[in-house]
Length: 579
Ligand SMILES: Cc1cc2nc3c(=O)[nH]c(=O)nc-3n(C[C@H](O)[C@H](O)[C@H](O)COP(=O)(O)OP(=O)(O)OC[C@H]3O[C@@H](n4cnc5c(N)ncnc54)[C@H](O)[C@@H]3O)c2cc1C
Image (cartoon, rainbow, N blue to C red; front, side):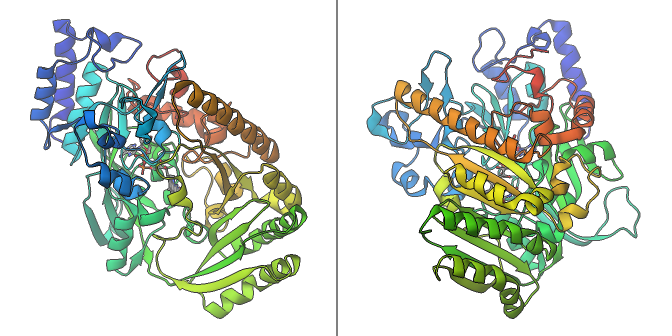
């Protein structure tokens, strides 16, 4: 516990009300950067800084390094690393999807700092929060939260900046940056606080800023492994948005989702309290944090995961570089989908990417021999070989890390680019009964399908009501996502492109929605900003309970993100409460 913080926060709030200093607290709108009627003075920020372990930060878009007028950063270094997820994560002003660094005004103009400096546009702040805290511990976070609550600031919690819906950015907001909270500890007899002594786990506790590459390395040094995310270089945060949204992994069919492997969280609430949250302590919040979404209930300071013994992985790769006809693509993808339940029952996970031109599948099996893996994949491999007149390449290789798994450079392709996506969970029943239609519908989208084999198996065996996570996950076998990208361009031309992309994403969304039906659901972390009923799509029948728990722990609604629990009460920019 942070001694006295609750007391301090109450003192500050009451003191301000009596002094009549803080009218903005009662306002329906957030106080935005440099609004003279409410924005804290430099002295107020100095006071905040004096409470922190580090100086305040003033994030800027990383592209600014290439604008002479900005006077900050190293352009050569930026150009070298612009598509590197870890490099971007190290910069508070950088997001992995650059469109969320920019802000589109209603009048058709854009505030952005373009990669392409030859467009002749000045570098602008866009959606990047102009000021924030480089938090190093729970106390820093508590002080930041108390300050933000007092001044009614719009808060953005940012960790690695990987969010696909721009939830770790916000124009004119105040950033709490957790990326540098890097402590990791291993305990082979971990007992959740308040739990019985005989309930002991082999556990790894990760500070809020730890990324998957660091978590995997730490686990491996103790001969353990973790259910974790996959991206080039392991850049996704292991203890932020990933876990709060559910956290899928190629190991999920064997060991469950991230949320099925959490033993304990620590979190700072909007009152500044630092809570330990587990099955015994604040069990309602423990339920909600496992799937209720990032940036919604408070600021995580750590996550403790159960670990598994380090077991060898085997990767099998099947690739068709070019389909000679759409009919062959349809037949190969149909067979792959038909075969998926068999793989899920064997706890195989993995990823497939396909269009009507090409297909690649990376399957991951645990604790099995090359011979057994080959025997299992043989029927699918034979089918594809026959359908393509031998145009299938197959390899089976021992594999010991999820870090660098990126079969066609997918991560690299999307990092540092504009990207919006649409997604759906694919129910097992649909694959079993109608795999040909699923294949036809997906191929008909004429866009690269990212097909994640991250559900089924252990994921389906968990009681759907044991965590706040969308119950649709428990019936699903796959999570599919389709992305749309565009090149930057100044105002009108970019706005035109953006509108076209938005229309395209909406079209994809309605096709996917129709395919899986209204209860198919989607993964909160990898989804579209245009969900018509995000409550149902992301949270299913858990929504009402998730919202009630949010109201209990964040009564002032300090933490709100796009399409997150409680966000329907806010306007589109999340600046003003509307309900
Ligand atoms: C290249 C790439 C690969 C990916 N691979 C996977 C994968 O294998 N499996 C998977 O499930 N997902 C994957 N994702 C999606 C990923 O889960 C989301 O992008 C997730 O939101 C990232 O969380 P973050 O904390 O790292 O990022 P951020 O963008 O910093 O944060 C994401 C959200 O979480 C909130 N948040 C962050 N930290 C905290 C905190 N300490 N307390 C409270 N809220 C917090 C933020 O406010 C924001 O709403 C991938 C994304 C990318 C871009």
